[in-house]
Amino acid sequence: MELIRGLHNLPSANDAAQGTAARGCVATIGNFDGVHLGHQAILEQLQTLSRAQGLPVTVVIFEPQPREYFAGDQAPPRLTRLRDKVALLKAHGADRILCLPFNDALRSLTAQQFVERVLIEGLQVRHLVVGDDFRFGCDRAGDFALLQAVGRERGFAVEHTRTFALDDERVSSTRVRTLLASGNFFQAARMLGRPYGYQGRVVRDRQLGRTIGVPTANIPLTRRPMALRGVFACATRLPSGEWVAGVANIGWRPTVGADRPILEVHLLDREVELYGQTLTVVPCARLRGETKFDDFGALVTQIHRDIDNARRYFGQRDPHVPEAARADVNHAIEEICAATLPQAQFPLASAPLSENSHGGTHAGPAPHESRDD
Image (cartoon, rainbow, N blue to C red; front, top):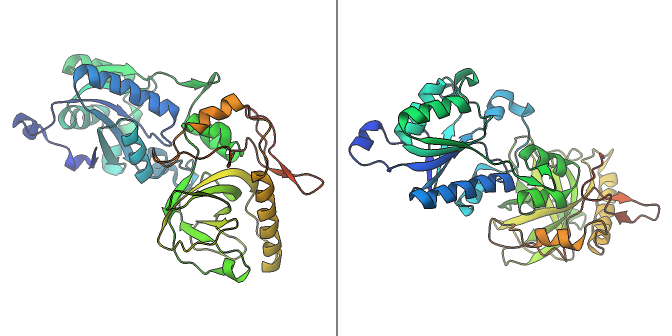
């Protein structure tokens, strides 16, 4: 798989004339945030065209994503980092990814200039698949009709993407974000085609957890808006491939302070030296939101309560998730086509956990429902 960064790395028309450029491609354009089942359906659509025409599958993405460029911290939180997005696109059939920096130069291109420079001169596109509501170019003047008109004139076909629905509901990045925010990790996993998770390298931090007997492995996160914040019962995949139950805090640690967001995970009944190691952490159930406590002692008390709640959760199964539906997630990839989360041991909750009158927890309403904290 080839990753091309920037317009300047695309072959020019002169290169094409000299035979140094690719002889064309089938392509699509979009953010592909999350690379969910809808995105995967587009890639399958492209692979069908690729096999029929003998051309590579090319995906055009932007960095930052356009809404991040215009809205900054007010943009929707990302589901996938660029690195993970590229890996997922590759896993689902992309032969080549063109990553265009979304900046003043790119946004100032007219729709016609974008088509000429990127699609025709650069990619020599032969078949383009985009949504029929796709807009592009300066002031979003370009649309599906323009692409079809230019395609007829310049010799490439244009077709719209097929809407992908699950349980009669359209799969979208927005819907996945809503499900994650509501604590419905089960339904989010069904829409993504894999459990939602994080992967990163463990770094040394202040080691406050060790002073209270709750050591944590800390993974730095980007400063962009986060899809999840709070405390979660989680499954952690160790470098050995073993999955271990744990409790994860995702956010800014308001009680003790932090200069950047971090994911810190405490493994239940396991203490392993993990500095410098790469972990995969999958939130399974939301325990509570991120809270600033009056003092460190109150935080410690709550941490131990979180650990107890996580233990209770992993000791039971969510009765609201039918076995037939659970099987869909059992076959889902987790670490980008590398490992499957053992659902029998680490079930994904369908809603945030809540404490009952006896201090226990339950998994909340059925998968199609949601509840605000």
